Image (cartoon, rainbow, N blue to C red; front, side, top):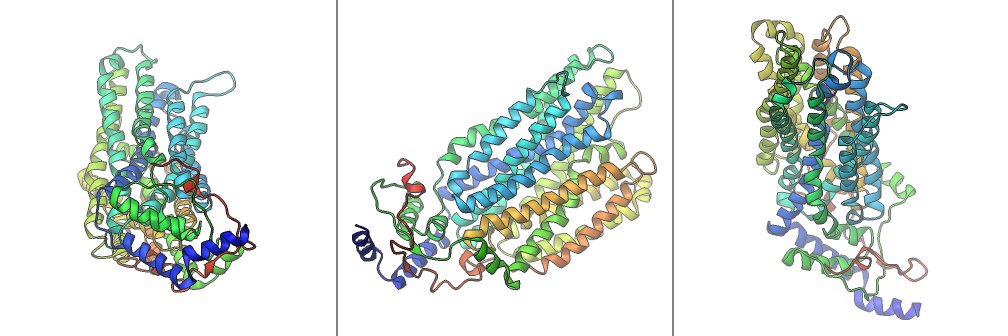
Length: 546
């Protein structure tokens, strides 16, 4: 029976040269495909995860102020509580990026896609329903659920990056991936907008709360966080029904026949067809293993790409999250925080309104335009020029903000806000976007998600260090006294990012296979015989026809 299957399979597949040719033709179809509704669908389905993740991560920036009014002593959380609710999700994200990055390369992009969104939805709702008991405080419960939510958000990074890059045509791959990532800016904006709407809706209730009992603010933060699960719930079905990428089917499952069929089907109809009775037999191709991983990344030409991608993301996130998660503190330091006069209830309301409006302005003025500036030029200038430009300008901007901090504030607070928005702009029109794009392109299929996960997790390590460091250092010498020196430290990290960018290849207008630094002519060495590779079911035979 095994011999008969092997013979019939050889007839179906032909010699290794034919297998390589079929693989090359199928990949060329994907690489040269015209932009279609299917690409729009991939962009929307992947982008909603970043919208939801950004909303959930940055909503805590405003929610922590609300939590302080309800549960904090003196109307604010203490330093450890504030740090806990803010750093829990980056720690979870770090874990999720490594875990899901690896799993997507082992069991498949499709099988994991949607699992991470389910985690985000459940954990977000759980936060909104958090309470306290004799053994645990509501802040402790929130920290646990924010960690779990972070694991889901972390999984979204490598999965969305790899799925969008593997389905994209070469000439538009940068713009498609940037459009997916740009949803992050709208998520940030939406968090501030929802906060403003919720606070405004509860204005009369907040003003009429008993002194010392801001009960209405408890409704505000729960609504602000809980509403974050709605976009994810809407997108969940589409994530669970998206096709497996042909590159995973071809290069990891090593099923060239199924992959070529998938390409023909989804490029024409946006769906895929499954024959549950089809015989599945593997081809001989490079297979992921610890030994193969060590051999591939043991070569400097490959390792330097991983090093450059990981460190660039690390350096960028030191500043990106150091600013983003603490914009309320920065706004307060420059006069956009709590008013000095008024009744206790009026002070609470105006404080929450100012924090919401301030974050809305910062998001609209810097974050969102930066993403879309990158979108316009990333497939024209290339990834490296955009990243280098961003790191160079951020070095200058943070140096000015740090060394001239007091002079700028004494002269014009508006000038400081302008520089702050400019920093946000060039983070996104620069390394924040390109550090997401490049790791989704620069590794071979069997390690693409793992490599992206490692790079992204390095970034989150930077975010954690920035968050802990910001919390421990900002009040050294007095309230917010150390902020100028923190900005100077950010400038130093931006300077080191210039060096790590030079390690990276330019990925524009190059196929993913070319970027893998592997010989493609002999990639498939033939059909795996019965003694070499068993006939097993693949993802196509575990699902019903779509």
